Amino acid sequence: MRAFQSEDVNAVLELANRYAAFDGSTSEADLAVTTGFPDGFWVAEDKGRIVGFAYGYFRDVPDQVLEKWGATKVGQVGLMAVEAGRRREGIGEALLQRLLGAFEKAGADLVLLDCPSEAVEAKRLYDKTGFEVRFYGMKKRF
Picture (tube, rainbow, N blue to C red):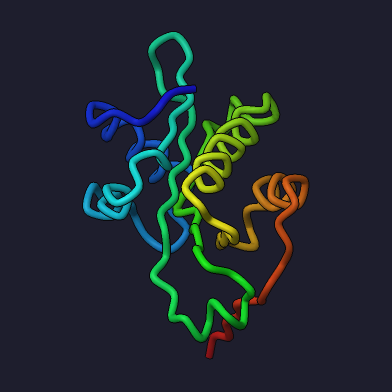
């Protein structure tokens, strides 16, 4: 486990687009949100090859909403992915814990994330880590 470095971008994008492209592909421009919180971008590496990553950033939340949520500083898990063949080895949990630790150290008192309903394994991890469902996003086709 180590901090993301700029030379990791291609491997991260490959993982993101293979395992976490739920509503479209991820591009280098999508990773720009991480520049404001570089301590929130982690990769898992095995024998020189990146097998997982997680990044987060701080959300700009209006004061009225912060008051309603009982929060002062809100982190957002942006994206995380682990190679399918490396799941259930604790890599995702380690990445998420590293990210949550960085948020806590930086003063976050609330962390949000979005999880597609198809991502059953990810949902299991988030439940195990103490995340709670706060809304249901739904769609209907015609």
